[in-house]
Length: 477
Ligand code: GLU
Image 1 (cartoon, rainbow, N blue to C red):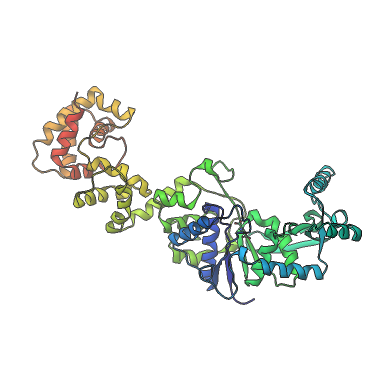
Image 2 (image 1 turned 135 degrees about the horizontal axis):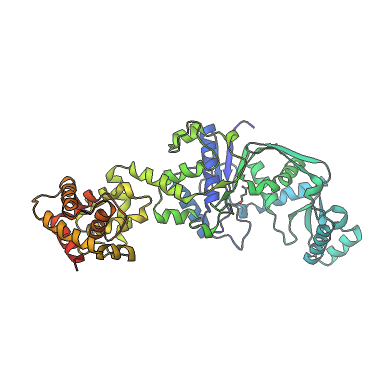
């Protein structure tokens, strides 16, 4: 197998989870690095849970990220169709081949009977519940079932011995067939199972490297057996460690946003997302964390990937996203920030003022959803302290003293810029004897209503004398 062909094979049953996004990114980087092709295959065999909307949203999300691919349902290559629901005839053909070479056998057991067999296996400590000798119907039974018009499930006989492969990330992995047990490849209702279809598809689509999450490690021995039974060449397998939350439990809704769309809606930046997710199980030898796509493609080394689970730390992601936002030219930042202001009550009619205000907060934004909160005080006519702490600060005696002194000093200056503002604050400090936090916080609350935010000198510059007068007076009892 010379050509490098990798695939991303999502099931269209909802929005893309961040773990799948990372799998897509790593496949994409791998293809770029090796000069190979990325194939997008839709695994929609679960007809009840699969929807067209999910499929569309998955494609939209991948495009938003900036990924591209070579073959997909909308961009068929020579190995289509690229939706599993359209490949049933192909699966049936390979089912017939397996019937002929004796690797599979029919099973007419009911769901309850299978449950009972499984329960008994668990009770005797057997990790593989199903074996041919217990499941296979005798010839007479088969005849009887056929006469009754019943269809069997088709079981793959696993047999005995070792199954092993050299995993690109996890090194050698060995399974004992005795612990795998026979498994269904076609259900009695005529639908094929995941392990069967994924193997047929990967083989026929000439996938050279199967890069996926390590939740699939236990499926791989079954898939290898199917490859061997059909004389398909084996691809290389690469199982990427799963992602945990900071409490080291599986990443879920409890940890906050987990789907790509949630991050997109909050205003994260695609390149930052690619950067961050690529670094979950791998780091650059240079120690650098902000890595362009070009550098990621060049430097990433699957052999140096960690074998154990990765932790998704949203605080770190926010920091990284903020670094990308800081690097944007102002015009790009404004362009990306505007949609997040359009949907608020904030008056954005004065283009120049809005741009000036956005310029002030650019270094303080971690993701675009924060823009409105940061920019609002800069564009408002009245400021009210927003929470208990801010209200307490503004009503303290020392704060009131500061406000009086501040207004007096402010009105002695004709022009107000960041430097004049600092000078005024120095004068207020000298006059009132209050300094540090106790001096700056009340002024910050008056100018923004908040206790955190951008550089105050710059805020004052944007607000201007008239507005500052009004804001400070508003807080004088
Ligand atoms: N459709 C499978 C999933 O979403 C992918 C299976 C695979 O990569 O082999 O988990």
